[in-house]
Every structure is written in C-alpha cells, then in structure tokens.
Length: 267
Length: 290
Image 1 (cartoon, one colour):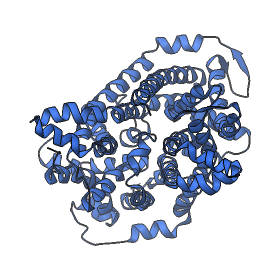
Image 2: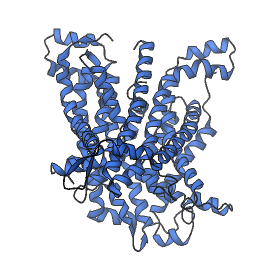
Image 3: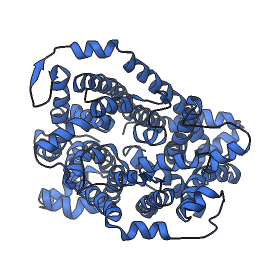
Image 4: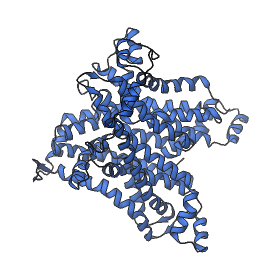
C-alpha cells in the first residue's frame, strides 16, 4: 500500500523543472546573431565566447567575487552568533525567551522592501555604504533568525544528560561547547551555514540598494547587458548559468537535510 | 525536554541580539520616524502626526496592490500545496533515483531571484524563448508584456516552477518518517488508497504543511525581484505587488512619509500572520510532546 514511485509523474515534473534551465544553458552557448535570427533547440555553432567575455572582464567577474565575499562574511557572522543563542534557547528557559524567539521569526518574515531605504541611510551615515560588510550585516536580518531556528532544531535532539556529564567531568562551558557539543551537531551547523549561504546568495534587493561600485553583486552587474545596442542575450544567459554553479555544487552535500532546513529545523 | 531556569542564558543570546538589533531595530525606528514626520531632505523634520497613515489608508493604491497580492498568494497556494503533496507521494523512496530527484528538485530553490526572473523572461519571449515561441507557433497570441492575463499566467507558472519543490521536499521528509508497520496495518484492514492518505499520511504531514503554507504565504506576500525582472510591474499596474509598489514609492518617487506609513501597515499584516504561525506551531509541538 505504500505509495509507488511513479516514473512517469516524476519525469514530467523534473522535465518541467529542467527545461527552462536547459534553455538558459542553450542560449549561453550561442552567438547573439544565432539567438535572434534562428530558432533552434540546440546551438548550431557551439561557442564559449559568452563565458570568455565574463571570465576575462574584471567588471563582470568581480561581481561574482563581491557576491561571494559578502555571502561568506554573512554566513560566518550568522552562524557564529547563532550558535550560543540556539544553545541558550534549546537548554535554558529565561526571562522573555518566548518573546525573543518570536521576534526572531518576525525578522525572517520581514519584507526586505520595508528595510531597503532605512538600511541605505543607516549605512551611509556610518560610512559603510558600498562595502561588503554592509551587505553582510543587512542580510543578518533574516539569516541570523534562520540559523538560530535551524540550530535549535538540531540541538534539541542532543540529550541534556550529555552536557551535565561533561560538567561533572570538569569541562568548562567553552571547552565542552567547542570540543564535544559542536562535533555532535556538525551536520546541523553545516545545514545552517548552507541556508545562510543560500539566502544571502539569492537576495538581490538589499544587496543592490547598499552597493554602488566596489561591492556590486553579480545580480546587479547583470542588469547592464541592457544597452543602447539592444540586449546582449548570450552574455546575460551565460552570467545566469554561472550564478547557478555555487548552488548546484553545495546542494549535493546537504540533499538529505534540505527539508529539515526549510522546515526551520522541525521535521 | 525539561529546561533549566537560568537567566544567565541572556549572555549567550547577547551577541545575536546586538547584531539583529543593529540590522532590524534601528531601520525599523527610522521607518516609524518617517511615518509621523514630513521631511524635505537635509534632515529637517516636521511633525505630521497620523496624516500619512490617513492618506495611505484612503489611497486606492495601497488597497489595489494589497488586493492583487492577496489574489496572487491565494492562487499560488492553491496550486503549489496540492501539487507539492502529489509530487511527494510519487517520489522514489531510496537509492540513486531518490538522491537524483532531491538534487534536481532543490535546484530551482537555489537560483538567485533575479536569475529566476531572467530565465522566465527569456523562456517566455515569443522571439527567442522556447515557451513563447511554441505558444506562438500554435497560433496563440501570447504576449506577456502587453496582455495582463498573460503576464499573470507567466508569473504564476514561474512561481510554481520556483517553489513547488519546497512543499514537495517538506512533505517527502514527513512521509519518509512513517513506519512501514502503519501501511501493513492499513493493508490488513483493507483500507482504500484514499483512506491511507487521509488517516495515515495527511496527519503525519500536518506539521510540515503548516510550515510550508506559511513560508509560501510570507514569501509570496513579499515577492519583489522575480515579477520586477519579468514584467517590471506592468503592463500598466497589473502585476505591481506590495513590495514593488513600496520600492517605487520610496526609492523612485522619494515619497518617504507615505512610503513609511505603507511599510508599517505592511509589516503589521506580516506580524499578525507570523504570530498565528508561531502559535499554531508551538501548540503542535506541545501536542507531540517534543
């Protein structure tokens, strides 16, 4: 009676997911004249010129570098502050803990559009506008909340007796946390880091509002393919394909935990 | 788990509190400040009281954007939730194909929002896109930049493409945790397929479905980048959702007062729904005794 794996339905669904992506890859391997003049399912004259344009022009590839810099900074900050907080939420009850936990959730749910302008003014006034750290801090708005929720979900799976035994054995809190506790929830930390990475990587509105030149993310660089000479479709498609790579690379490692992360640690 | 009462736990929460306060509380206070003041730039403020709230509540603009956004959220929930459950029920249970399906399904979730827009913008164009071109060759006068209905359909299909996997992955994880014995018991009782779904699978998925529905509701309620890239809010105002309208108002026209009042009301709606979400979720945790 267990529901059967149905190859037909899954094939249809996966095709629905993959065809638009295939089309992007297909376009990225064509020249602009071919894209506009002929309609073909496969590229006739296979060309890597679009990728070459991106990978040799600093104004293009620096977009990727900028994005990666602020994404990594954000991931490190988010996980570092979320670890002790999640431990506190999973082990202790303290004054206002429920309210605090709820307040965190509202930050995950806050529309970035509400914060775009205030962020712009806040970071301009403290001289952080157009720096990587500004974007990294802005993304903490939703990523810290997410990391705390995910880590808390993983930590409550670790029995509390373990902590007590460690204290009896004379471990200090810091040593216990780093030497014993963190290795135990390593997969949780991995998942939390992955989700921070991902949500910072896909976010555009705040990243674009807070940067101008030096820390411009790839997502904002992509808009410049619109020029007086018309759209440079090939390069736009190639840039799009390259943004898929980091996600596709890391996804394999966390495939069994994706659902748990999206469910904020509660599956 | 029994928790120890310990107020010193605040020290562990403190670093997080500082970071989040810096990026959440200060900007929010700025918004509140703008919403009750009138400004002509140069940091000069004049008290305006509730004028902006009054003006915004009366304006056609907020209500029509809210209406469009509510309709959009309702439509995508009505499609994505049943479709996600349906897909989850038909996924392979283990082995290579299970991993393969998981990885492919998760891929759309990791595409940057503006690239999702770009993919569909290209895919739906009648001159160079596969979808648009196919529809056009079938004799359908499809044009998402001029026809509001087509623009809506394109954005809805795009959102289904982007997020159905989320619902499916969550349901799949819940289904995996059902012990085989339940199915055997159902078989002995000669339960129909529908009854197995209704009394075994659905109750098990209840928890994740609440999360899935509310995440999808929230994210569709603050959708910005994808429709912005595909249609730019057009044709006319037909796909101008709340966030698009807000950014237009605040950054485009620099109407800070009304935009701030708009933001606060927007945020209150989100806050209300989050609270319902949180209450339902914590109650379910209690029922399960976790």
